[in-house]
Amino acid sequence: MADKHDTNNVVVIGLGRFGGAVAESLVRLGHDVLGIDADAALVQSWSDRLTHVVQADTTQSETLRRLGVADFGRAVVGIGTDLEASVLTVLALSELGVPDIWAKALGPKHGRILERTGAHHVVYPEAAMGERVAHLVTGRMIDFIEFDDGFAIAKTRAPREAIGKTLGECALRSKHGITVVGVKRPREDFTYAQANTAIAQGDLLIVSGATKLVEAFAGLT
Image (tube, rainbow, N blue to C red; front, side):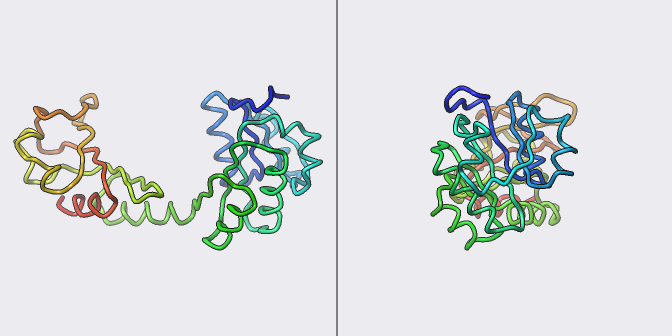
């Protein structure tokens, strides 16, 4: 089904809300996706949207081997509430030697178990989305992404102190510890930030930096 460890091919196990969204996005990005789920109804619903879809119990490495999963370069385990199936599936993928295993965790304890059983990357989609929505609800940020090393990127309105000045003149980096990556003006193309980039009323700034500094900067607007 795939060349040995072909990184263009991805197996997504668990086609619920999270796994299904990941699988659909991967297909849109041009990847071949093998979707696997124990639920026959879910498998049927995805049959015309993914490259391959199979109903199977993924907790056994031999089952995954027969499906050719050992040849895939990446795997995503999106199994939701069945913690045992989630952990055993990650263990089975690890036993097959899949080199890049991503797994969804419901909480820190679940995440630690997944890491110990072979997951290379553990994601907490509910927690990440909850924090992102909280930032958006405050109205300070228009979009917000936090990485797991305390680094964040946000889209926020330009603060009053920067209006009518260039980025060099307002010195936002030295004052607030953040980096302005770019500027988006209404009805104009995105502009990568330079020292001579002028900031006008209504401009949106794409800023990056330590999460706390980015949050404090967004609070200026």
